Amino acid sequence: MSDSTTPTTRQSSTTAHVLSLPNGEIHYTAIAQWQPLYEREKAIAELFHVAYLVDNQDSTPRPLTFVFNGGPGAASAYLHMGALGPKRVAFGQKGTLPQPPVKVVDNLESWLSFTDLVFIDPVGTGFSRAVPPEKDDAKADEKTKSENPEEKETEFWEVERDLKALAEFIQTFLSKQNRWLSPIFIAGESYGGFRVAKLARKLQQDFGVGLSGAILISPVLEFSLLEGTDYNLTSWAAVLPSMAGAAAHHNRAQLVGENLQTHLAAAEVFARRTLIPLLALGDTLPSGERQQVYQEFADLVGLPVDLITRQGGRIGIDVFARELLRDQQRIVGLYDASITAIDPFPDRPLYEGTDPTLDGLDRLFTGAINSHLRGTLGVETNLTYHLLNFETFKAWKFELKGGLKQGFIGAVDDLRVGMTLNSYMQVYITHGLFDLVTPYFSSNHLADLMKLDPEVRPNLTIKHFQGGHMFYTWEASRQEWFAEMTQFYHRAIAQN
Image: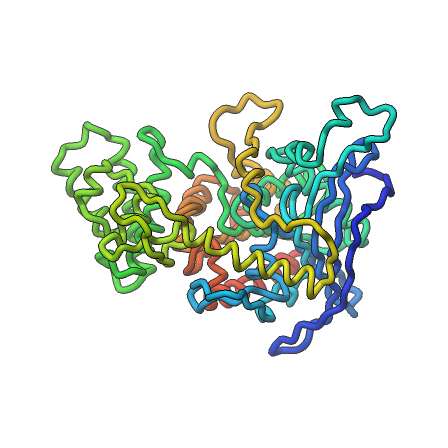
């Protein structure tokens, strides 16, 4: 953290608001502004953020939660306008997409009920940008003078620099707002959950920020589990329960038990105890036994057994999304397989349409966040709000500098260290049951491998909800999650 006092040149906005809830009113201040990041006393980037601070009459510091999304390349608008902030996008009861224009409503499940909130947009997302080099600096060489903000942004598009930027932001915010004595939480979705797991260690070990809690929402924790091959077997099993859940939702599975939960439990057992051994045995497994497993697989996930056989028990999410409802000319969403869309090219061998649960959301969140920031919060800027910057996503570097590690990057080791550095920190991991991209069973599986000491194991809570990657778009799931998080915060703070 720098001692420089060089201010940002962008105009901030501070406004007062009231959120009316069934149990009373919450009076809060919204601060929308850019916070500089420094290097050698010079501003190199400005992180846009929105802080919601409740007018607190109590002398006890309120909890403070720093929130970010993932991508990499996603702004914080998804959690901001989808679940946690005082305003949210109105969805259908089970997360279905409404017709235009987008409707923004008061969020009765806003986390402002139990914590102040700071939504952070990493460099290259939202309104956050790199700062152009000072071209009138006589000491700057010609290379530096020729750089532009877009080129400078790429410096932040790698794992360690991104984490350092977020940690520096948090440290500076705590100082500027005099909030070092508040119970501090971090929450992140998708790749943001990966960030949370990493920061659970880095903030405490390198930046002196003690954490009361860490919330990982639809996280990707180990990238090796995202893509299966002929030789990487676990990812095929990790996604199977989500496929089984989606098949049951669409009445395509031969349901095991009486409800969704018993069916999922059966799929989890099958994935671990039957599918992984089948794949590991390869050609040594007798064909009769193999075919029996394929049939059980087909019954669980609602696909034809000849397809399972042809794929050798390796069903990718693209195949599942295309084939589950193919006879109806429908595809299911990758991020929420309960959502369906018309297949525009049903006669082509490969699916060539878009994903309804990612591309379909863009119009909703882009409209909502721009209306909220520019209208309700009074932010004045000519910048474009980058909801999901694909240039960031494509350019992201996952290498760990200074290490000899090879292969896929992961964050579970950092989470384990963070939990032992601070045996009071509570951790909450949550997924949507129908998310095929970051399936819930991956986190279940990894948690069983963490070898947590009995002293800290009770600090880890894992709970999943009906819905997809953004399960909070389902009304019942959002309400249930809100009740869960209310108790989670109470539990985390009560230990202090």
